[in-house]
Image 1 (cartoon, rainbow, N blue to C red):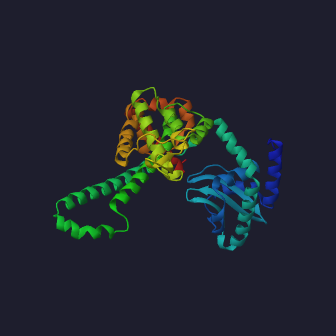
Image 2: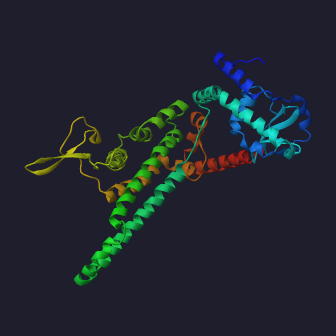
Image 3: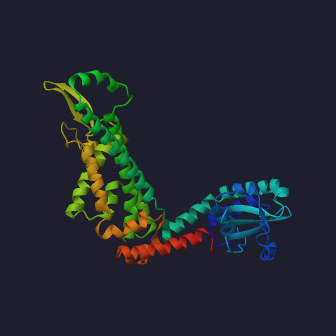
Length: 393
């Protein structure tokens, strides 16, 4: 078969062809299959095929097997011959599989067929990598959207934190209402629980802050696309690899006083709370060492925790948990305000991916004009997406 692949991929094609042999295209069966497309039945062994896209790229793109095309509830269909028997490999609504008349009689042979496809898929990895690189360079990509699940996670932990804080406040109020003798009698009960309320509040606060930064790391990338600030696969890749401050600046103009105020507060919260846990947990200001002096035990702050190259005895004041969480909640309101408000409809009220071609051709710019425009656009796109998932061609 004539191939236009680069030389190194031609070698990959030949290696994959050897691995899949003696599985071959079945053109004659393909012609007859059009009139009885649903007569073959699913085999159990066929459920163990590699992911549908790898099988398609292997058989159709790399090895040149014939694809019969789309039909109702069917994305693609590739008829093959193996050891003198006819099979069809199809991606149907209920999943990829190997189909044949009287499947029970062919299970062992289909198992061998599936194993050969696995070996050929493994041999084709350099080709798949080449396809992936080409897709990214052309920016014909969908960027997976997990905004709402990540936000729900943040909201859940925030709710649990507030429950603990309320329980603590109620307990303090209750104990204040007791007489001195009653408080003394209850004193030992404070140690009955394995963890105190104050400990659990502190741990939950860290969890809330972690979930907030996980959410914003993700949503900033998607907002940058919807706002038209990045439009290519390489730009998305670079931003995904960047640290949190760079992601923030991709969305917000920090020359704006409000954006700058939130940036400064959040960077300090991230440094003191998130990095405190992630990088050794010495202390929220980097208090790793102490030395003895006439003043008593004196802390020494690690330089990297302060963005410095020098040790220090003093640094920024600790941002206490309630203050930090108050900033996070205020920022979420700010995040979805002004020109960014329509983006919330797309990112949190749907699970639609962000489509780079729609960023580059101005589609998103038009939809971001108002919440009403975005609502109409999302409804249209969700309908198209559901039709595709249902294979309603």
